[in-house]
Amino acid sequence: MPQTGVVILAHGSRGERGIVEVPETLKRIAGGVKSLLPPGVEVTGAALQFNHPTLGEAVASLVTQGVERIVIMPYFLFSGRHITEDIPQLVEKLKGTYPERQFIVAKPPGLEEHFILQVTQCIEKAAPELWHDVPISPNSPETIEQKSLEIVENLLPPVLKISGDERVVTKRVVHASGDPQIASLVKFSPSAITSGLNAIAQGSPIFTDVRMVAAGINSYLAEACGCFVSCAMDEMKGQEQSRERNITRAAAAMRRLGNRLDGAIVAVGNAPTALIALLDLIDNDGIKPALIVGMPVGFVQAKESKDELMKRDIPYITIAGTRGGSAMAVATINALLKIALERNGHSWDG
Image (cartoon, rainbow, N blue to C red; front, side):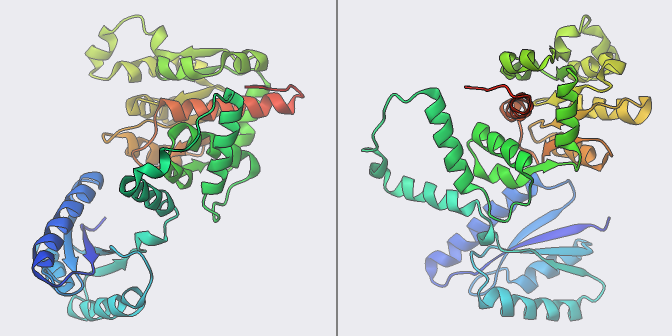
């Protein structure tokens, strides 16, 4: 892959404050973005007008660093004339100046649905007293949950292309995270729901990477479906095995399960190394879980392990990027168990 550079392109601001604040803000944004991108990607800021570096200056700097591909990320809310006319014209000039370089223009973030939540949060910070007089009543857990899911439904992006059962799972994941932005990051393989529900119908075991995930899975739902829940770490008898092999205990624990993972549902909500070990078992030992709920969280190997999961021809439900965690893995399993139970004619009151 060619070396890539990213330009965070803001409008710019005239005046004494703009001269200082625009470069400082762009530097902070560029630094934050760089820390979340793969190693080796150069990130810099630029202003469309009034401030330096300009887009041309930023591109020239990246070119001197040997960058072959440049992604221009407009830091704009709307697709106005700057997006539809000015920036494309500048990019065409840059292509003429650097014909051997590839230029890609990303969509402005203002088009993303999660900005609704961010706008609301800004209003709350500006006028927190709006929330002071909201009545708080001792509602039942069922009422609170139902109200939460109704709110989640209204916050889901209208362009979200998912099936009915996928929508149920996604809503539960968003509910568990408290973050509507998660909705667009939840990814399903084509057969994930069907394979997961079939495995539950057969009473297949559910293995987890850590105890927190195992503890969060609803025991009533699991028992009613005939599914035994087991944590891989609980079956780790010797810590020395992981030390000798220079791998984490979570990875060693997953490897120890071996053939027992065939036809099982595996939920990884914490440890990227556990998911990586599971993928190694699939690639090298022919292990075939019925479904992998791969949702490790963090900034080291979490995104990469999930990217690898999505390359495999195996049923999965995952959350793209660095986000994830035990609560969301638990919510996914519980949602599937509830769907399976309801399809068997059993009611569930929470």
